[in-house]
Each structure stands twice: as C-alpha cells, then as structure tokens.
Length: 168
Image 1: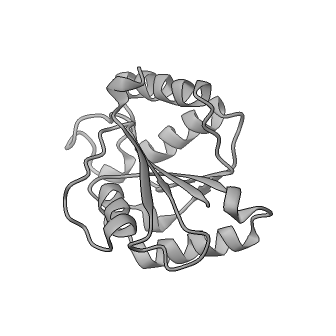
Image 2: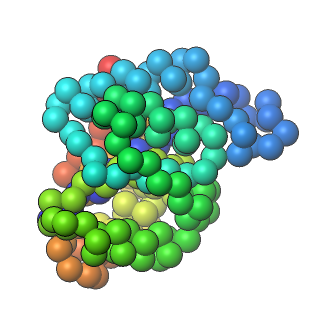
Image 3: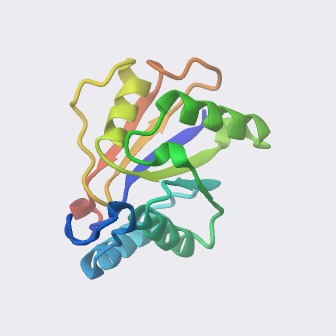
C-alpha cells in the first residue's frame, strides 16, 4: 500500500513582516529545526520517491532541506498545496503519479504544505470528513497508508503523527 507523509513547513518569519505572505521565508530557527527533523526521519529509515511542495517560499525552503538530507530526492511543486488548495484536484494528481510509479504499492510520497489544510486532508483520507481533531505542528509529520485502489477518501490508515519536539 502506498505511504503518504504530510509535513508542515518549518518555523517561518513572523506574519505581517512581508508585504506578500507567499514570500515569507523560514526563520533561522526554522531552518535549523527542520534540518534536525529531516535528519532524524532519515536516520529512522524514512525515504521518499517524490516530495511535493506548496509554491510558497517557506514550503519550498522546507522541501529543499528535506531533498538535501534525503539525497536530492526529486521535488515537484503543486499549486494545489497552497493554502486553501483543492483537495480533489491534488488527490487526482497523486493518483496519476501513482499510476506511473513502477511499484505503486510501495510508493512513498512526501507532501510539504500548510495548516489547516494538511491535517484537514489527512482527516478526509481517514474519516471522509474534516473533524478538526488532528493538529500538525511546524515541521511535524503525519503518515498515512492508502489502499492500493481508489477510493482513498475514508480509507486511509493513520500510522504516524509526530510533533517536531519528539524528533529533535
């Protein structure tokens, strides 16, 4: 069964400090902690076939850190991972990517984005609706196993939910 890892971007500069919030970068602390989290996950044996990321600067920087730690893992930008992105359209893109993967049942996909979207999407995959139960801290990770065939909504299995403080 394919694995999906939802990763929130690291700690960013303070809101309101950039005229265009999409350009707000990771803070020095955010870069440091994100790198520590990525190294710990790598040391624990986590691997990705692909990292998908939001186009916002803080998510792009987070994906760059993960890609470097994970041996230059391929990175793909998805506008659907921007805040308030389209869940169904994103899920369709994941389905298309899996259909082209040589071993879809063993595929591992890392998703780097924003809250509350990522935890809400995880809930959609698990329960078929967003319940506001899951919380994803900055540089935290949620791991799901998806069934080999659609529908994925309501059929995902949560196997991992780790805040960054437990990885650093």
